[in-house]
Length: 232
Image (cartoon, rainbow, N blue to C red; front, side):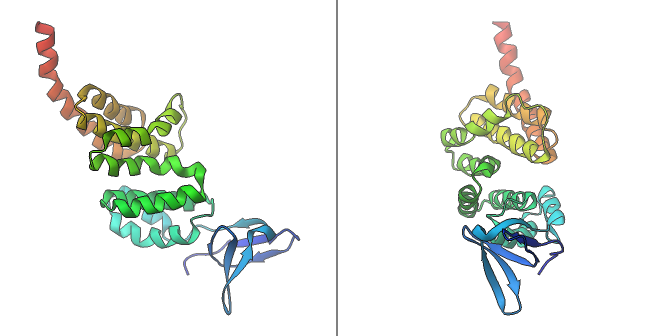
């Protein structure tokens, strides 16, 4: 088992148990015992802690470096085991798994993880929607992708102070919107979306670089059209 220092749960009776948490589902938290995994009903638990597992930070960095298969090997088992637990590192890991499957064009797997995550932790669903929209855009289902991103875009309006997770979410959302509008032939809207990612959500370095490159390409394409329009 990976790093577990700090795992524990506190029963409603006040008793604390320092354990190795091995998984969970909607009804039980599972922990390691000499005879195997044992369940503890959530109804008996007052509080709990799941320590971040060894290798998670490195795997998340691998995602940002484009090493998606390498990251999946570490993060997928953890995301599967701890999906229902609202620990920040678990949430980051699950979002990264969806992103990795999307980048590897494994859209069925991405959708399956995202669906389970949304059911287990509904407040986190917006974080995976931008990556699900990538799959829709790849299938040229542009209107469906735009609709899927509507709530994410709404959440971005007027939000000036961002967490790294929010920057990634909004940056990917506008990048994908740009691809959708480009696919629909609305190059001006596509340019606006790409620039939104590059300028406002630059904290997401990877998405910002891609968006800036696409914006620069579109600017070159649009310049002759603009020049012709001004001459008329």
